[in-house]
Amino acid sequence: MNDASIPTILVCDDETDLCEMLSEYLGKRGFTVILAHDAVQLRARLEETDVDLILLDVNMPGEDGLTALRTLRVDNATPVVMLTAAGETIDRIVGLEMGADDYLGKPVDLRELEARIKAVLRRAPATVELPVADGARAAVPFGPFTLDIDAAKLFRDSGEEVALTAMEFRLLKLFAENRSRVLNRDQILEQAHDRSWDPFDRSIDIRISRLRRKIETNPQKPSLIRTVRGIGYVFDPE
Image 1 (cartoon, helix red, strand yellow):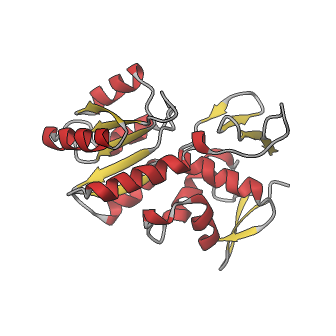
Image 2: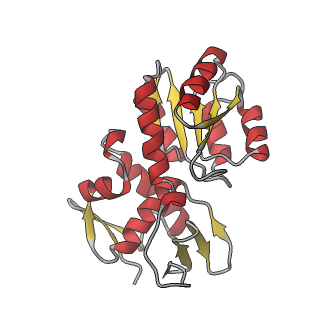
C-alpha cells in the first residue's frame, strides 16, 4: 500500500458515470481512487502507481476484463474484484479460474461493494501476520518451493518467484499451517475466505485447481495437495 492507512483502489470501467460515482463514494470512505476506462489505461496506471485492489469491469469494449485479467495474472497478484452486468455463472467460474478474488454484479450496491473491498483487502497477503521469533523470517519449505510468509511470496529453489493471487496465498498458507491434516471445504472456506463473500459451490475447488497448476509436477495427479474423496483436501508434501 502507498500508505498503510489509505488503500489505493484502481477502478477500470468504460462507464464514466459509474467511475465518477465509485470515485466519489469510495473517496469519502477513506480510499484513494484512480480511474482507467480500458485495458490499455489499466496497464498504464499500474505502471505509474502501486495499487492495493483493482475493480475491473468484465464487459469493456476492445480488450474485455477477463482477457485483461488473464494478462495481468502473468506477473501481478494485486487483488481483483470483477464487475459485470451479465451475472452469468460461466463468467463467475472463468473469472475465478483466471485469478479474480471476488465478483459483484451490476447495478452495484455501494454498501455491498465497500464491504467486499474491505473483505478482500483483509485477505490480501500484505495484511497477513504470523508470529515468529525476533529477527527470524517465517518461511515454509515444501518440495521444490519455499513459502515466505513475511513477504507473502512463493519461491522455487532456483530463486524464481511464482506469482500468487491473494486468495492463492491464503490457501497455501492455510495448508502449510495444517500440514498432513485433512481440511473439509467448510474449514477452508472459514479460514481462507471471508463469510461476507457468499462464494458458490465450486469456488474452493476452482481455487485449489489453479494453485495445483502452479505447484504440482502433474496437476492431474497431485502429490502436494491431495483430494480426500468425500471429505476435502490434505497438504502432504512429505
